[in-house]
Image (cartoon, rainbow over all chains, first blue to last red; front, side):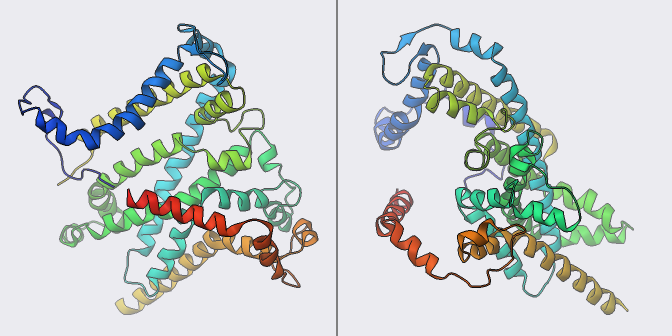
Length: 305
Length: 85
């Protein structure tokens, strides 16, 4: 992943004004630019156009102005999906990062069999989400699932899990965090290895206890990794689809219908492409806003030295 | 004294890791265990941890139920193509 670990001088990187090269340079860039235009820019522009139109895949595309956006503003499903998306993002990103860091701290010692632990903890990430979601949907089955059988051992009444508006989202969050924790652990392991031991020794000499040296030395030193994981996990959470499709199909009563799932339902269940495109544009806009806000925040908090 | 403290700490570390790994790996074991059950056993409540008579022929039946050769080719072709590009 080409994530910039060093600070790029932004003013120079973004400025196009000084470009005075000869036009043949553009010709050389063409093989890279053409697929980008054809498969990324063009479809995005097409979606932008569609968001101002009405279409059902079959009849001709009819322009309707901003009607789709107006409809969104008053659509209770859309407003609900906003809070569901926020719930999902917060509920998946924070535990994935904290859990990953805790696992990394556990493993960050000379330990026999560390490679085996690492492999096992990482394994959920490399298995297809669709397949593990199926297994988890058996586990959370309200009637005969393993989760309820385990609760029964402790004499707790069976829960409705994926059939319940309040517990469906926690069930999906468990699957998502279970899958992502090992992944963020791997990043944190590398980050922890790169914390200079001289700094930790100096802190110990100055009388810092383990907690203090973790809080004041380790945490700031691994902040670039935390920042990277935060951004990627938030964007991942906006793109989560498989586990929702398999386990709840956005239900019950829209309790697990995120923005992306609303988009899917509008487009491929309601065949309301215009409306769906408006949702898609909205998703693109918030993704962009989050990324930009993240990078502004990064300059103030993340330390690279 | 220092050595001993380290040893105890490692034991704690190992036990926590083993428990966490078991929990994390459990869905995979559950998948395998379910793959070896009869339909009746899958639907039994409370579920059994491991089937009494592992139904290894389930794998054979699944393999025969769909054109897996084609699926395998499709997967390799997609993965290979995407990797190459």
